[in-house]
Image 1 (cartoon, helix red, strand yellow):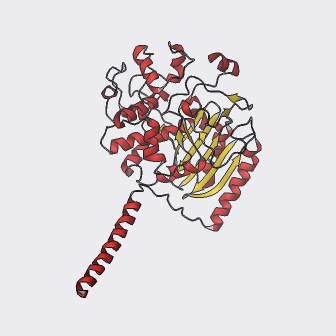
Image 2: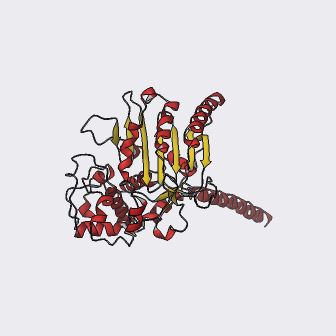
Image 3: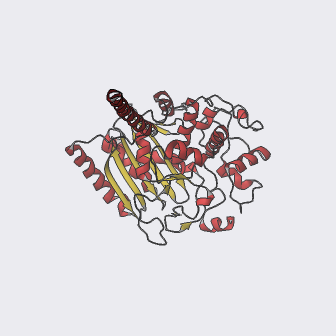
Length: 407
């Protein structure tokens, strides 16, 4: 009897240990992603980078009326971090690491990776025609890939919506833009795959494709697949229900920039995030946590080679292809008074993140200057011309008088 009891107690002990191990493993496995552990920098290397970055930012961007966030990191280790200005210039509250800012077209990096994730899961292909998702779409011969690399030839909704019957007293959604393109199709910019033509319409259509395939709204999908797992706790996709909590933006003179009828669309813009959360995004792009290496490589491959240029575009990412073989993978953004710079230097595993809610071109110039702190990119030949390609992401900001007349 005693012998049987000992066997029972021993078996129960072993079973309990095994169950505890299983429970721990299950809990661990339920977390899809882990924040990567930053690789330490040598003290001398850190000090030299910090000295150069501090000297530069203190004498340029931070001497202006900059309002926003700056993080420069290497191997995931933050070298330089600074917060300046105010989330709301009318209230003079303080910018913090948790203040979510609108990153405008930098949002396209998320939409691009989201589409590639669905491709990896076998739910669509790069060669799928838009007619698969929008059977009555009036523009023929356009594929998912052409949306991603801006070779669709579609007209830019930012430029044509105010010339249609749309009542500008109402905020339009992605579905509304699609409906207008169906009922009042504006002229296309070019034939499909003929040339590169940066077009925000491409990315609102990609967001609609995500919604059709997954059955989730674009904000829900991004939260479930990326923001939540990557612990990007201060990141969300803006919709009009967020208008009271969203960090406002301002003109260079400090005038509040109110919403207009185009603020209800997403995929091309409308992700709000922080510099620290974008650092998590940058680090995840060095792993296969999001998508396979092959698909990541395809996102960073140039697709528009009609004319020689260091400027190119991948699948959701802009590219600078330097004559010496170095590559910059980046995306800048501008919408209303918000502008953002997100630039990755893969050779050095460095990233420059500058976000602002009071528009200034100095954000782009500052990011551009930082490249040469880490490697041989532009050197003394550096000029603002390298950043001008990013400005037509949205049409030029209207005057305050025009803004008021729209509403």
